[in-house]
Length: 96
Image 1 (cartoon, rainbow, N blue to C red):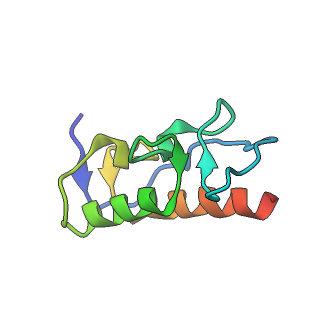
Image 2: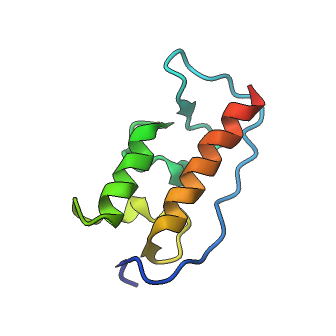
């Protein structure tokens, strides 16, 4: 199945319980077994603003498509993926 940029909004955010993980000094969400690695778009092992910005750039057409940007795995890279990343980042921030 190929990836599409935009057009349809859909899919569910990946499940994550974010249980018990402390934030590292840089404030980024570490990728742990309790954290869905699908949120790590840039492959650095953390959920940061860089991951969100990478998907925004793909949706805007400013950079090449990466399959890792389809965080909700619906086959479409769109604003839904951006929203899911922001929610995951904010959900963790509220817990600490």
